[in-house]
Length: 306
Image (tube, rainbow, N blue to C red; front, side, top):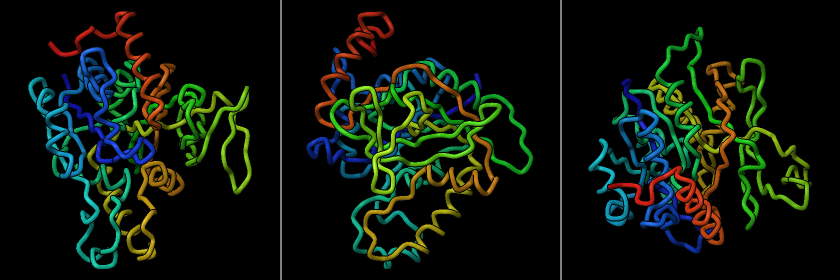
């Protein structure tokens, strides 16, 4: 069995979820949270280490709710995403900022604890078994691409990734021959109204094809990608206005830029599984119902961990 790591980005507090820590909300019949099912699926697929990206202020609750029990079944590392975890020369420039820097920074925080291929996921998203099986297979195979870093992305159909309770943001993908990613565009306020799916675009509403392939922040990398993340993060911090307290260093944007520079090649591994997650507080009910249905169908045991 070849080594591969699961990285779970769990540092965010869901502001739209009523201020609570949405990643730690129970959705399973025996108190399981969404992360439990992702970890279960990843270990079943072959991944053999878990890295949690959290904030220090939630560490105690996090370990009590999930970390301690996961440590009993697989090797676990913790890394901490904090607003001041940036190169020293920029700390004074951004001393008034109180919000971490996004998914690119979250993965960069893992640099010191990962030496093997790894998959990245959001803590509050359920991806399904197929995604982890395909990701593990890709990450443990040999890939040759001259002068390019090989990356994989699990793509989902847009219609399988929406919330009934409000607009969502998705990375809309353009996929070319050999299932290679051509471009990815972060698209905001995507909603389904009747038979149409629309999104904000330059102040107007744009109709989007329901079967468009979207990124749900499930990416597969090798450790050499850390070099790109580190270099581009310095560039991002250098050009950003010191009064900008909202802009984030985001994986889809980073990868889109690297595609244009021809520094990376991204294989899109499509999953037909239905994604679901907790974006809004009202989503918890439908996620709980979906998990319970999977348990009834025998996809998961009633009690996930013995």
